[in-house]
Length: 280
Image: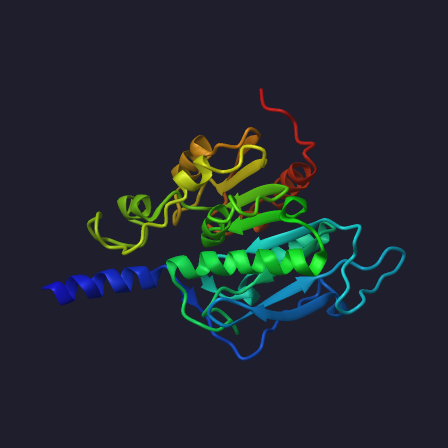
């Protein structure tokens, strides 16, 4: 009986991480020119981590210089979700690149080409390592960077806010905690209360976030994987002095960029520059 319970706990924690391992990344696409794409590696706690930059062309030029960022462009660090690898979220990088940003994305341990096995503490540590890498590479402190976390990526971000607060924080389709997911019956027709070894809890993390960090909580109204109530819980708990809850009408999990790109782009751009309309 104990073996059965332990196995159930292991499987459901494992369910949270669904990486795709590859020997090489595809990247590509027709939006970001090839000379503006750069695959990089850096040392992580468990071994080598891999990431990718999409650079903006240099001022007055239509081309990118290998390994060189456009210093006039805002740097966005993107933390992807629990599935696939950085290739699977390339549309996000294309979207933000089209808005004029330098964007960095990386794979947690066990994802893509990154070494190791993903875990609760491991992905948070990898997030801290990636932030330090971007700081070192750009000579910018975290307070000059934009952090954007999608789903599990939001968890990684909000658990790194105390040591490395960003210029602004944006999370998309982030869960409140795994217990709430189980209570909602998210893809699991099972009783709640004991299945996850670790409760990936974002509510206390955002409650204790540095109040000076502006926080945009974005979520799809039709998300049937992480229900919209998660966003409402996170928004209410957030300790940010400046915060906004953006509900994207009709968007399901991880589809808001396709569902209403104009609204999402408008809010992301004005949030990064802190020029959004003030709330009534």
